[in-house]
Image (cartoon, rainbow, N blue to C red; front, side, top):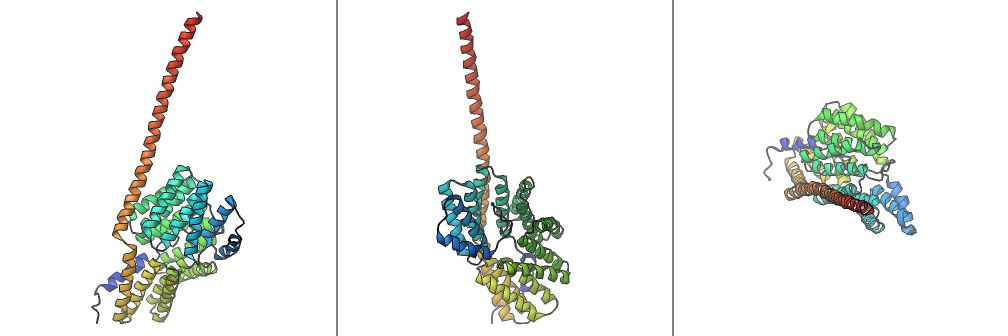
Length: 389
């Protein structure tokens, strides 16, 4: 018989703190903003146009951008669209679509838990945005960078980049990206246990999504407020909000957040001592997460299953599920990757400072040249005047 960890119940409480991990995960934060939200049906229709291979130039760029954004069922295919978008944008020297391609590509690696790669690609996108002086893109990418740090539980860096993003986006007309940054920051505050801050951000982002009739954002906001209700013990309100969110997301075939919300529903039913319903919701969450390769949600589902079987007295099964949870958790929390990400952030900020120094140095050189030219011109004018005299 396995030695069952005596503090498993304590570890299982981690699920309540982490289960809503970053539902927005960059889905609504793309540069060429898709106000209609992600929709697999759009990707299916556009795939027919792509297969005809008749578009060129900016029309082809827009098609690839829309395909990469809307392809939900086949993430590998979404990555292929992103990489093709990057290649074509480089050939066309189009910085807007080059940025968008990197944003989509980084989102893919973030989704599958390759966080070091995601952050590296996001910083490439940040450099593109800064070089092109595109404030909206800069605000968007800082949100995505903050998301990765938040997943790694590096809350210091995460809060720093969320604040930078929100500050920039408040000065633009990009309401969707502002609302996305707010809801992602709210998720982070939720996981930090700062529920009042989380609710404040959700209450600001919700009306923006509703005003724009942005269903995906509305669904995430409903679900996230439901998470707060669950924390406050308002189970009926929590269940109502989360059920509405799941219904919208199922219609759009957006399964990532559904997997998370199903685990929350499991916890609600567990508190009501309805073990069968709690187990059913968790198994469904695990099935979805496994089908779409969502490492974080797989790990959370295993943790919830461990908790359920521990309370039911099935200690062997609880131990096995907990062991699986640890495997997935450790695959996301790679210490070396965390250090690499910190180095990337430092390199990025140093490079930005160096750019500022170089610009200032060049400005001073230019001013010296101007001063010399003015002096030479003055001498020539004086000599000319003397000659005429």
